[in-house]
Image (cartoon, rainbow, N blue to C red):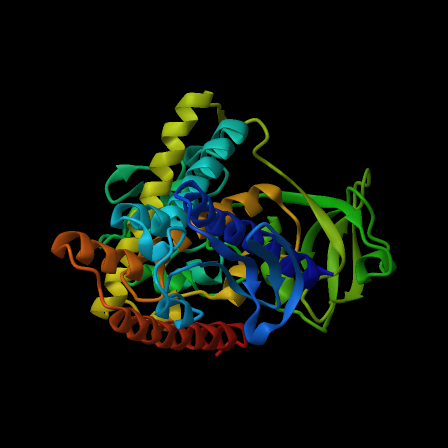
Length: 448
């Protein structure tokens, strides 16, 4: 069921992004009187279509290959490599008959929509959700942070108290740690207090590579206490008699003061029988409960987290104030993409450790349906697509833009032969990149 939810979320997000991207092209074409022959969600490779209908001059449909979508434009050499229509005399409704500036607007239409969509989602999320967080001070007063396996790898320890990021005092350590400027920057210094002594952590220079590692546990987090909120029938927890409001104190006599410590410990006991020390609801003495942990490292209950109810800080923003903040957040994310891409090209980052393809992106959505997480990830993917599509690679929107700008500067159109071979070269580059990303995804998923 969890896998189905993960795949469903990813396919929904992908469908939204593809349709809106291609709609950007479609609307620009319609506005300038360019004939659109096809509008497809997903690719109908080898002519295989799941669904189609025709309205006016345009065939609308859904292909079987969920790696993108397309609009096919009359009088244009695109990924279909259809050059037959180019042999006839140009017609007024064809792409090639329009002024270069109109063709340019058509080509950037999809990228503009992806950019605006990312800004819009961030805008609405900030306006509707506000900013809710546990202040760093409250986390420090409660015993410091929890550090997951990836967090420990880069130098954190559970119980660390965060003081500052790159010399700036910390108010909201989760937001500051996730800031693209910090992750993609060249300085990653965090001042902490560990066991009563102040020290400075210098995180790895290739921080983004480490953070891309797969883990079911957060890198760093507040240490939430927990009780059992509900028990799933038929699971080890239910068979052992655990019930709502029970408090788990220890696993095999090892204390688990917070939910994340419990989760980390129980995941190390897969397929093993453990003894839980439990304080039953309204009881005064602990009891020991024996059960066998499932193969996925769970025992079958949903937690109720608590510990910071009176200390959480909520900031609400006005409608128009949120718009500016949404745009700022979007452009910061784009800037991080540019920096990351530059590091990959320069060899500073290993693309095998930093890139994520369809499998990796799908896993980010998780196995539970969380609309806040869904829209936040969708906004970031939309912005990532905008950046990717504007790269000057033939077969991408940015490649066509490159040819059009050349035409506008030289006042001479690029030859159809050059466009054709450019398209072929671009498709080879993209196919190679796609195979590489799938390989990265699969090897990462398998733990290699």
